[in-house]
Amino acid sequence: MSTYVRRATVADALALAEFAARIFRDTFAADNRPEELAIHIAQAFGSAQQTAELIDPHVATLLAEGEGALVGYAQLRAGSPPACVTTSDPLELWRFYVDRPWHGRGVAQTLMGHVLTEAARRGGASVWLGVWEHNPRAIAFYRKLGFRDVGSHVFMVGADAQTDRIMVRSVGAGFAVGAS
Image (cartoon, rainbow, N blue to C red; front, side):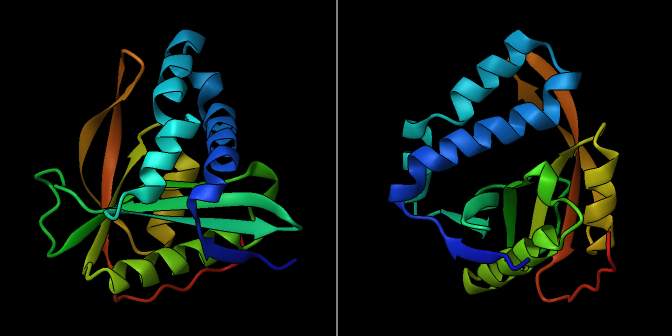
């Protein structure tokens, strides 16, 4: 089944907000207190928040669609990286999610290819991301694609301070992925 990746527009704000909130909840609900998760989702994934991100020239949002539905998304943004990111011209892979039924079907690899192309188009020489230290599947995926662990930072879910591993890779380096 093929996946199509496109740049999001403001018209996608509501669908993206609903999708992003659901994916975040599906991914992290089992390991977080419901009240903290609700606070984070309300702050990060509302329609107004998504609209603001979609019109922000420092944020690129890519949508992966399959079978006529949204199946994944990624957001790349410019900004100041944590001190442990010492590579040149870094851009942050701020959000990267694929709906669980689409895991193992090549969507994430396709989406990452588009992320790296977009990063290069924006003048980035490297991409960094934060991934929850208790998400071994995601950490293994990023390692498989050439990201290396360079440190950590705090990520807040509501009032709960959690540790994200900071991973970085060169934009220009290709990657080869086997079936997952």
